[in-house]
Length: 111
Length: 117
Image 1 (cartoon, rainbow over the protein chains, first blue to last red):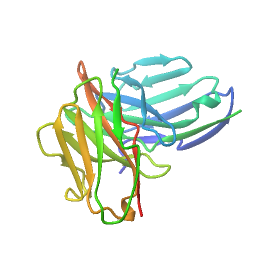
Image 2 (cartoon, rainbow over the protein chains, first blue to last red):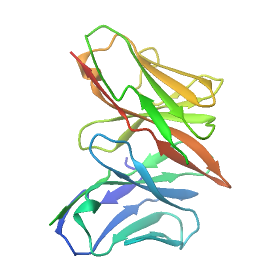
Image 3 (spheres, rainbow over the protein chains, first blue to last red):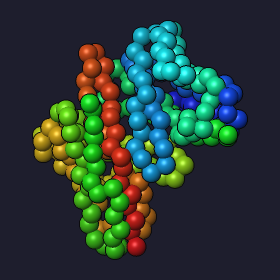
């Protein structure tokens, strides 16, 4: 059973388009992190959201935490080839040390 | 800040030998570190949680006698793959946990590519 369902798992779009990646769960998370990973490298932390309904922006990336802290989304505006990579969401449940990871979204932005 | 290093970045070894991978938090102290394994085009799979000064907690299905973890200081955890076999070939990634107010963040190392011949 996958505790964090991430969708879509693969996405290939043209430069300049917008996209949204979703992470959904039936569990409540005390915090949720988004990472971006390039081939042969470790994941790099993009943002952490902790409050229900919270919205954080990182340049063209907008992250939202659901009101009930069970889901999150990543929206990219005017995608660029440099946004290509594997995007991972990971949730921390209260009282648990470890993160629960989504399956990942492999994003390809075509010039 | 929050930089984590791993060494080596890649290693090739013969079947039956042991390989040690180091994970260091360079600019913060980490009571807890984590070891992950990642298969091609897949997400991260947690292998074990490493706590400084105590035994590691292994995930179900991970052999603790095969994947030895030592967390002897607040900035260093090591993973030793003992008697490695070709099926152990993978990308191993560590992370170090940094507490931020009332939640924790994990910062990842660059990974170690292990190839067992």
